[in-house]
Length: 172
Image 1: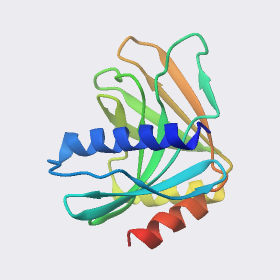
Image 2: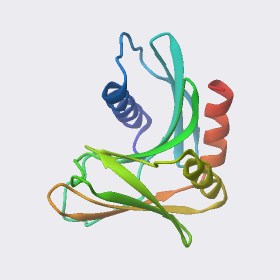
Image 3: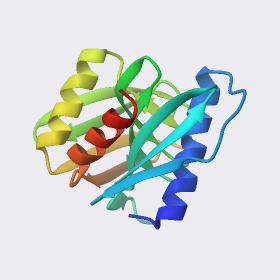
Image 4: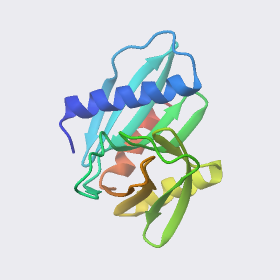
């Protein structure tokens, strides 16, 4: 895991960048750290007078080793009106129209891509992925950059249940 200040800054910029893509942000404040749960950090941030909470983790391994991946995180966010929304965010743009694959054990989920972010299409898939994350050990995520580079990341799921419980308590 990157240092707390770096993860904090990365998480905020990724969250705000993601929010800016879908919402107008009138005001933001610095995120408040909720806690560190093994491989996962949790934060709250006020956005337009409402609280958004998120948990994030950095990859333990990034492939291929010889490319610049930029800042890469897997996040679970509680937006006002939406709970436990997983997303994958990279430091590069995905290939247009490409799909990202998330895998825990033998179960796979396809995520659609927009610029440098990937999201599940269906709420039912979000519920299933979160459930698998809570019972799994490792999350593998594969994608393709806009340059055609196949990438793969391995994320630890150690602490994810406590991290999700933390954001659910703070942003119910």
